[in-house]
Length: 421
Image (cartoon, rainbow, N blue to C red; front, top):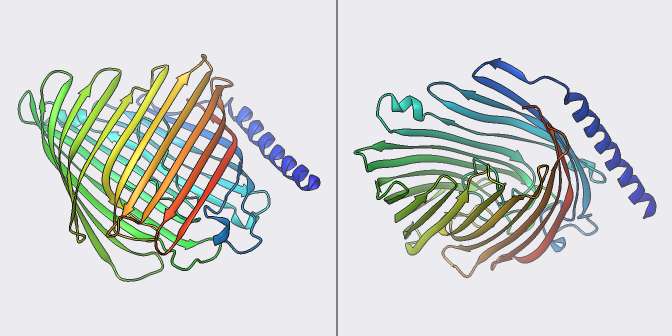
């Protein structure tokens, strides 16, 4: 046992030394610049962590003798394109990483991501004074079970269509959401808002052996919304919202296609100041073919990421797709709070907690629960290099007629990132 721990520590030590050396060497490289209005910002990162459950499933649903915990080293990076002209503003990052396990080398994997936005407000303003238009893209590939806590200081938050607390077993997963939103001013105080979001989730074979009754569901979603917004004052506005989601699903291993439709009618109140934003929505949602109608709504509170203290809080009860164990829709309850505080010029503390409670159709006594908490300290080592220490705790509980289980997961590690901006 002592020899095994020494081997793991030496393996992590070598990974950290290589990452630090690479970051320090590359830290002296100049920032690439295509032209005055365009910046290309490269970055690299190295991570070492211990994961108490690399399979994302309880021990009783794994083959006997399977090792659940392991040390993981990761090295990767991304390239961010920042482009600003008279007509548009773009912020797009493309990257990935290679992840290696100390003992389970057969599980080594690559992951990849593309995320960012393009704002076309200045372009459409030339044709219609006061009009707005934005495109947001989020794509990821990973065999890890994607979590549902996002960074408190992230300026672009992923669509929550697939991130409501349902986390399945380890399997290769592709997730993509593409959103287009805009508004058209009718008068000085009245505008029409609308948008469309395409969501896609594809899942491969479950890693770690099959379990009877366990399936993923490949899912396509098409969501469009629209309605008028009236500006009560400079900071306050109200809106009427019509939102419809069409879901098309099938079992990941193959099978017939089936569809679900969600229709929401709601009212919205939004208050916006320079430093923070409050949005409250309430209404009803109709689910077909289940033939159920239930109250739905949400409360969102956010502050600007430039402040020393940043807050993000979400409470919602909405219909969302179910893509693990059972397809169709869920009544999804989500509570999320995150706070980030700059303790010192170089030191920042972050804390987040999220709880997801999903009731499946048509038997809402079947539930899937997830509680996740994250604590992180970030230290700015140099102008280009930031180091993080983090701990994540997760508890998953599935209460269904076909499969009932519960387990906890602990992840602790360091994260070293170098960015040449």
